[in-house]
Each structure stands twice: as C-alpha cells, then as structure tokens.
Length: 92
Image 1: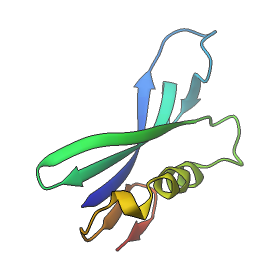
Image 2 (image 1 turned 60 degrees about the vertical axis):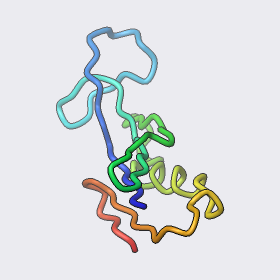
Image 3 (image 1 turned 90 degrees about the vertical axis):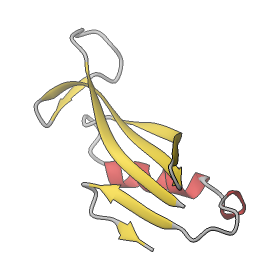
C-alpha cells in the first residue's frame, strides 16, 4: 500500500471566490490531496485546502494532518510507504 500526498492547484479566474490565492504563479485553489494505492487501484482518501495567505499552516502540516487521519487499522496487513510529491517527506 502506498500513501501519496500531493499539492495540486486548480486554476480559477474569479477575484471574490473564497480561498483563491496566487501561489507559484498560479491563481486558484490549492489543495493537498492524499491518495491511497493498493496494486493498480488508486483512490483519493482526503484533501485539505492550502491558503498561502496563512504561512503558519504549510502544505507539510496539512499533509501530516491527512496522514494522521488514516488510522492503522484501515491499512490491513499491507506494508506501507508514504510518498510526498515536492514536500521533502519520504518515509517507509
């Protein structure tokens, strides 16, 4: 079982939309998404909104929050690997 955490930006054009900010030259909604992969199956297990206007809550903080919500009893007997795309966290 592989737990993948990724920062994804969805581009938006409106100025009055909630949580829409500019980060890394992308104006839109920035999400930290957690996917679980078992063999060829992959499905999202949760997401958090990253708001660059609040630098005290980083994408790494949000990724760890998502991983903590995935309880070990949900993992079954599989070996786990956690991969963070661009976060600097890789744990096995």
